[in-house]
Amino acid sequence: MSLEARHISFRYRESPVLNDVSFQLDEGRFHALLGPNGAGKSTLFGLITRLLALQTGELLLSGQSLRRQPAAAMRAIGVVFQQNALDLDLTVRQNLLYHAALHGLSRREARLRSDRELARFELADRAADPVRRLNGGHRRRVEIARALLHGPSLLLLDEPSAGLDVASRDALNRHVRDLCADDGLTVLWATHLIEEVTLQDRVLILHQGNLLADGPGQALCDAHDESSLLHTFNRLTGAPKP
Image (cartoon, rainbow, N blue to C red; front, top):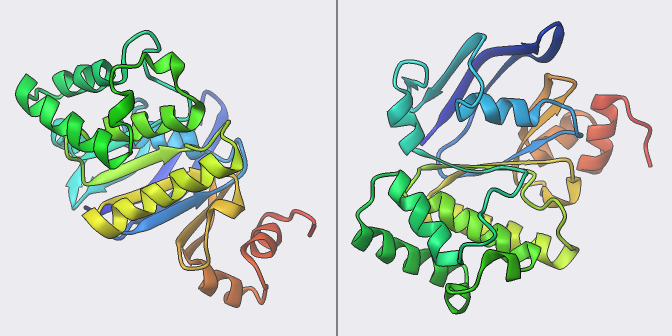
């Protein structure tokens, strides 16, 4: 599923947060939305998931307006927000089943899909554990498994590695990339950590509400005559080179 943003602008009272942002995601590909904290990444996610109302511009899923067909759009989107949204006192399986019920899945179908996702994320042996017993990396895996239960075509992840150690962060990143390769899932991974992005990724650089660049990481480096994404990012945002 493709996502297209057309001339998205948003402000909180008198403070502009997004300024005429336009882009289109490719189906079945990993996209990195790279920007520092406060760049507008979470606001953009809020607009795509309809937690925030569009003020200016249009968002389209495979050509269909989110504004005109919100229910269909929400069925096609899975999302993992920066703040953990699991119920810590419920078990891993109970968290998944509750989410499935919200999407209208039968209990039998919910259990089948839950078992499948738990196996895929190597969490089957933790299904009966309360979520509060899990470490941060495992909690993130549960959140992604939950986001995939209803069979979305587009997965949004807002700073999904926040608070994780390096090993857990790398493992989570690999898991999500495998979803693109194995299932053809379209992914938008928002991060401020350049080490989570590769030169082969499609990279969107957001800074102070403006989309400064959009393209394959290597092509962006070549276009700005830089040797790395870090140097390219610093040049575009005006940050000093390390």
